[in-house]
Image: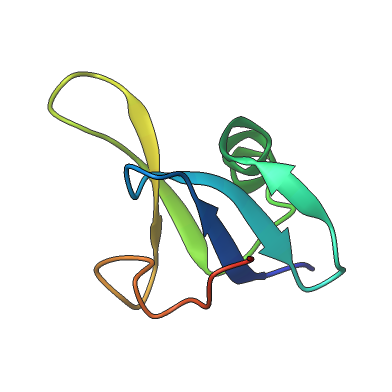
Length: 70
């Protein structure tokens, strides 16, 4: 099963892509779908106050400790 190893943020600091342990670079939306399907471990989905589905690491409060893709 894959895990997230790095992130890519836009100039606003928002995560737009993830790098997986298999070397895939996937969009936030694709990562959300893969987590929901059980293909990526160590990440969970949650619904924020606006009703939008988001991702969060299971053991940490944010993705800040993940290295930047670029």
